[in-house]
Amino acid sequence: MLHQVFHELTIATRGRGLLEFTGQLTAWIAENNLRSGLLTLHLRHTSASLLIQENADPDVRRDLDAFFARLVRDGDPLFRHTAEGDDDMPAHVRTALTAVNLSVPVRDGRLALGTWQGIYLWEHRTRPHVRQVALHFIGE
Amino acid sequence: MLHQVFHELTIATRGRGLLEFTGQLTAWIAENNLRSGLLTLHLRHTSASLLIQENADPDVRRDLDAFFARLVRDGDPLFRHTAEGDDDMPAHVRTALTAVNLSVPVRDGRLALGTWQGIYLWEHRTRPHVRQVALHFIGE
Amino acid sequence: MLHQVFHELTIATRGRGLLEFTGQLTAWIAENNLRSGLLTLHLRHTSASLLIQENADPDVRRDLDAFFARLVRDGDPLFRHTAEGDDDMPAHVRTALTAVNLSVPVRDGRLALGTWQGIYLWEHRTRPHVRQVALHFIGE
Figure (tube, rainbow over the protein chains, first blue to last red):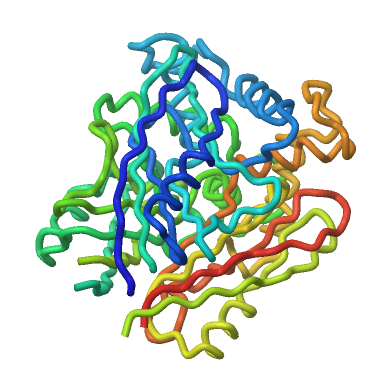
């Protein structure tokens, strides 16, 4: 029977970079015996993103972060919103260039991810932060 | 009992820039007595975006727009699609770099937004436009 | 009555560029007699994107690709992940700058797209690839 399940994940980051948490989602799906439906993730912050990316070669994460750091320079004099430091406004821009929502189907108790896809929290601030991800499942 | 509700919001923009409409969503949720579920927003245009961003310091919106204006230059000679002016193709590129869909859980009658998150329509054309946002709610 | 339908589309690309597949979605909706609900698309790859963009002037697609090719240079010495060639890491970056998920309401048996919106698979690799798009519908 169709039903909904809500949850909130807390993820502690280690500062700027990509942190995979696919395993936490897989565990939550198994614990709740969710078989088929739609999982939506919403990150409740404006200076970090949710991203689905390659989970094989760690250089992909390093290169993603290096590209974004060059594209959106910390301390760029263009920015006025600098209250929390040089990485404050770049974190907002990096978030705008990516996403804070993801929606992934669940079939036969598994996320419909591709072989090489992992789900990441991308911390854009240089210092560690504690981040909240709201989860919503609807299905069977 | 699980059910669906559809609606369409009409938002008049004042030209390029970020326009918050979280209040219109909150009002619609209250009017329809939506308690828990998933709200999806789809913007029916290709030269404006939907964005979740900081709703405290207005400099954040100013800086976001300034960054995108520098990244995607109006009148860039790279572009061939210039039928509607210098800001025509940049508006499509800015839309591709952001998003036209958002999905946010609703719990206890409230959007599961973070403390500093607001929902914005980002107009990318320099002149004012009238924009349509299709809403879909599924839940209780 | 609310129910779910799953499907998987296979799309063969011709190398880098935007390929519209709105027609395949429209056909699937009609075949399954889906009347109202939410359609979610999830692309199971990390070097291609899903994009909703203008479906009128083909120059828009050409310009989008030209802009992204200039923004994220093939062979950029910044990148370490080059195992599959000069376009390998740029394809991951272009995917991060866009999206692999889309959610579009369905009303009266039709996708709630705007007049000029089409749904595209954006291949970021230079060579042709076969891509899988997981579809999930919930509604009536």
